[in-house]
Length: 531
Image (cartoon, rainbow, N blue to C red):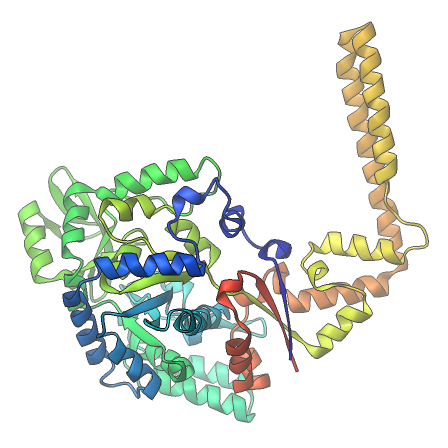
């Protein structure tokens, strides 16, 4: 098996925000705390140790122990659960929605990044314990985002009209999904394993949260992964002081709005805060809490509270108060002895809007780590790349740029007018100089003529390139087919494909290859060639 690593920048798929973060650009430094380096983790350990109290730790251990009572827990996960009682134990967390059958490939990459980082930190800091955590987004209510997965460009969808937090959804009615899945998967040994995994996950567990926990535990329990279901009254009780501040002072709105305005000067802002960043959550319902005059209302319902009533409701039923995208990170950092959050580029970008909020409420802001990203190649695809003389980096070029490059490399006469364009621009520089000395009113005419001439040259270049592509149509077809095979829809496959495609082909060796080769602290994009 071969691996290659290339800079994230070379793929063309990562935002300016993330590239500047990885470069530790001065423009973005004020929006994060410790950087994901060994020195950064050393500092983060001290910060978290000084802020995380023993009562919160004991409550976490008690709740997780209860949540795992009905789970076939591995020895490794049991060991990590026990370690969570110890004051020298810290977590590395990643979170993800409850996508049907794990959803896109990067679900795996997130979790393996967390597992491998914990192993690396254990080597570097032998006096401490590190536990990988998967935070299930059970309180999410956007079912349309999670009710499907793709298999060989076919969408396998679960239709349901249930409402509210998706973790509470009943798994009834998935027989039709299983029937479609079975037809697609085939009858190989690996396919049978996956079908049994689906059946045991969704047919033997009553809720989507329980099913997702089962599947994630089956895939990653041997590595000691701990799975957190935060839709829990005892865990939410830890958040009560912060929920009160949110309801009565709107601290997150003020601080995140300020940080977002600063961030927007150079980067795209991912989320916009609301005055109250909480939902009201009961079975079948998750709706925003809004403040109108002095009354707290649950959006799209007749439910409302006075200040005193909502405070009483919070004390009696903290589980009914659900954090949105702004408050959820705080909830995580309050209840876990967490050092680092591992996420995709979009996730980390919105975390960067939150540092000022964390500082204001005196909760340590975690290290942010861009998850591993992987492009899988087969040996056959690697050989095709070599025969076409396409390098790994060139594979990520926009298709029109890649074809132009390779057609030119193979043309008898290069279709590239860069020299002519440069010569033309130099002539118009001279003409502008003449115009300035004679009559300034001619400057506009000179500029217009330059634009016209350059446009004509570009059109001529495009026509000649199209003609050359027709001459080399076999090469063009082979390159186009290969690139679209590797990068479906001209995007990273990790957002398009489900792990089942590779598991059916390679079985456990696929997961083993990821575990062996993903290096979270290398901060580079991984190309993995499977035999």
